[in-house]
Image (cartoon, rainbow, N blue to C red; front, side, top):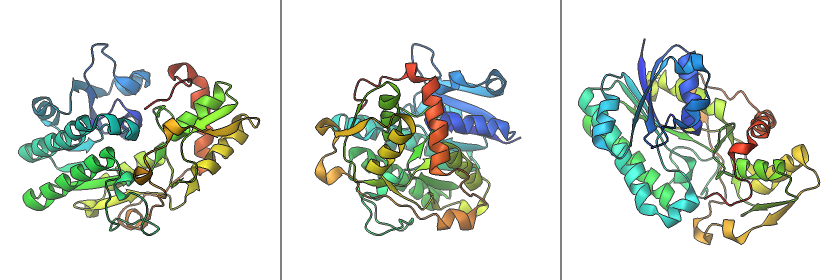
Length: 326
């Protein structure tokens, strides 16, 4: 039985990935962020029969000693731990350098020292910035349009360097915008849904014209696992994308029609990114993942949104719809 370490397992994608890996028969070690509440994040909501099969270790991705202890004894690492909120990166860029770049370095160095068989480093479509051409393939130029995206670019290039310099079997996994149950309220889809479900008639958002390529979280997770199972993926950077796009305005209207047709959209200046930082178009090319793996997306946008709305309807008390979540 292969033993896999998942960093960031307490988060949105990480908790779904942990759950699915257990269901597929892998031995999972879950690295969660230490806190005085002894909270394991979304792992605390998983069924007991899942968590009984998970070895939980607490620590901080910025601490090389703790990371080494977590990596010791595993066959592979899925590295998802990161700071991801773009607006907060404008306020506190140093924390993003420490977490996203130094944290990734800690994982890579430990994996190198222990001879880890596979390392999947999680990137983001934000590293591409506004599309210079579409669909965006893995050869698209990288643009640091926010401190967040700049640190993810740095982490990606570190991962590449460990593959080229030390032959570490690294794959850079680059999901386009993922959504679904358990997502943070700072993301656009939960922002829209929680405002609608809380009865607000005015849905406050930033820019409405940017487009995004949205992956339902279960498709993103299956993408990770398919990439992991493909030996041809070693040393590659691989998009997980649907190859379709929708504007934020169109997406919002779709959710309004699903939940409360009487609501209307209001532009909130506080939620606008700086002009040169806004990523205006993201439309991914999925040719490489289709060629190198057996992955195929299983959920349409409408299907994924339906499941996401159901989750938030049942868990609205966990979210603060009345404030702007950075």
